[in-house]
Image (cartoon, rainbow, N blue to C red; front, top):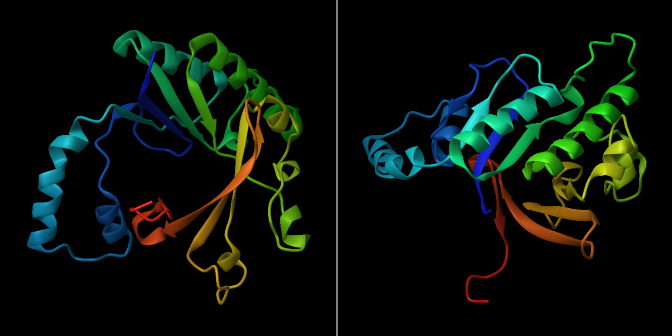
Length: 217
């Protein structure tokens, strides 16, 4: 089955499962910067709304995200749509385990969450992308490039993941860097293929990354 449906589990207090026609990047950027939209801007927004409302995209904001809740949401939407899902969790270190054990260490909690998400992906056929925090190990390393071992709280994440992509920006540490405006997507683990680094252009005013390959290539 093609993966045509997307569910994003956001670990922040918002209304529960809703189907979302997401604002265009330009609109989000304007809202964040308190920019007043012109009549032309609203015309452009209206022109794109039909395509946006047709997107099969759900945002979920439960106050407490556990693997069990993720499994339930995925199965419900598979029954509803009949298609496999792409699920993005932001972020895995904020998730809870299904067992309410106050004595669990962060290492134990993240390890259990990681194992359960791996099982859920295998059970349902969903592709699960987990955003994750890194520790500060890279800040003490020459070049400050992150490594897989920098994943915070648990080595189980490294073990369970089929692929790991690390983000690195030289201009985050050196604003005068000749690579200002560039981001590296470091594919540090790829269970079914080679590893590599892909350089893209970041456009934070639109909250996006863009391919740097010339259009005529």
